[in-house]
Image 1: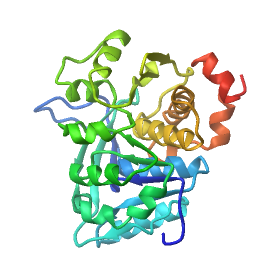
Image 2: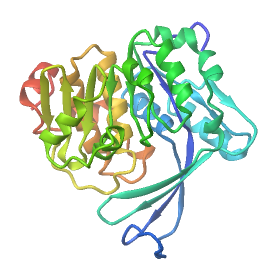
Image 3: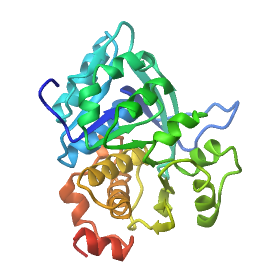
Image 4: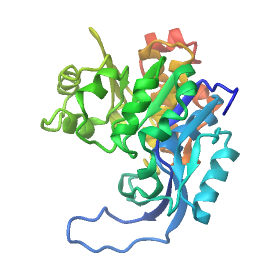
Length: 315
């Protein structure tokens, strides 16, 4: 990556996903039958980087893969999608892996084994210090060690976006460095050690307790809620038929980072991300379902009309 400065840098995980379709998600102690397994490229970091690349954004990924053939295939897939892998380290051992169960409604349940992602430590992140400092947006998640995420936040001079997934207790030092936090409803509740918020008002009240500059809470089929200063804006998604929700949150984060890199106000950026995420659930798989910019702009959405007007999005 020497001499090249991407607009957005993603600091995060790379996984091989084993996807199995099931009639219903398993409950504790329950054994169920599933369909034929399918191996797919995944990991929140990789998914978000590919979401950005599909939108035409110059993006690099800071992370790690293993020394096995699966890892080589994952790195090759990222490069084929247009993601700069110059800061993707290779470490001994297997790649990260995830088992993804998907029910007929498109809802999913996921178990992740970190593999090489556990090797993404602060010293590895610091090797990309110059690129992190020069990026318009740095985007991270929590499938890598928290101290590596803090190192990325510390190096960022542009906008630092954190998707706190999977939810973990986070040090106040990290939260204070976050410009835009993007949890879902459950992750927000865990971060705030509170009951799961049900209403939009409850979501907004919890978001205001966090020491971040702004919070964008993804609400699944209900869209997203932007909480920034005195602004609270609920953005509803277009009507789509969900096939697989795997990767929808990653698509949202990638599209949000893309719009923020263009200098869009946060509400406008979130409205764009709501559209992109809605499109992503209409196809199976995480990375395979990431839409292009043309597809997102062509989608008519009943989100926030004022935001649409400022975005110049066709109605």
